Image 1: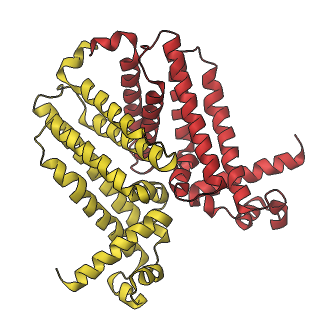
Image 2 (image 1 turned 180 degrees about the horizontal axis):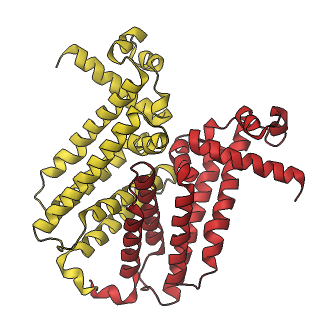
Image 3 (image 1 turned 30 degrees about the horizontal axis):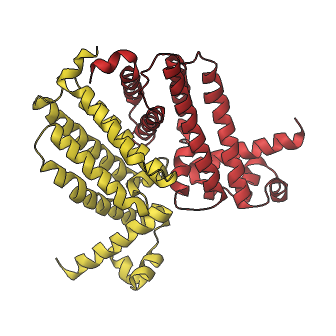
Length: 201
Length: 201
């Protein structure tokens, strides 16, 4: 990797911290330059506009998320085991991001009423992430772990809800027992999706 | 009600709109005065500080929420019917708040790392709301609709997750079918809590 690439990554790393604290709109070239002891023009050389900086920050954050959550989970065997691994890595991510809160969660409410390139990239990323969860849930059907009539998109919707409720409980309410609640919700979801559960209906 | 009270309510109504768009920190005396065609000193007479204005805005918003969601739901018979009514009124609230997004959701990420009176009141309100859901779920146990070993706090945690996932799907992703997903998740939650479902384990 070139030095220019390293500098760019360092700027984006700092940008994610500032964004988690003050929102994407709170990232400024001036504050980035201060934090990294660079000149403003040095930062500006990498990101010519505020939109470009916000898009690059979200893209960088998504790459880190993919490296830490998606890639390792996809190494697990297809089926329920992989879905469990995905959820487990997601919860580990939520714990390490706890100091600042997850940027995706804060960006969602910050950008939902602000049309523009940053919102567009966030929507695309979030849809991609829901698709990943759904695809992994689908391997559970294909491998015979889950019933054929299970809706993978429904599973993705519900798992996302568990993660959001956990983030809320940990970050805002400071409820440490919330991790257990998240796992209990996940276990119930998986139990209902298993073949043996059509005894219920 | 006095004229002073009416004016105060009008200011707070406008403040919730501004807060939903630009965050609680985006409410300013100047913009409120402009929107309501009042003098700045007229607005200032009601709210002496930014903190006081933010706290009053959250308090006002919680009162509206209680009137539109909690009060009507508590008129339903105790048990599963009441829990269903609570969820139904909550979803109706989410739909009407869709133009701006729910202030509680955006305030949660805005304030989670900002200690102060506004954060304190929000945490207290959110805990109260989770307690209401939990209490209503408990009537389901008491009335014999749900199993005795159902954890009402777990139900509250999960229902909150469904609502957050719905808000995210509707507001950010524009997925209109999300309401059906929310109901499917709720129905599964309730079905699992029913007495007859211990066939599962």
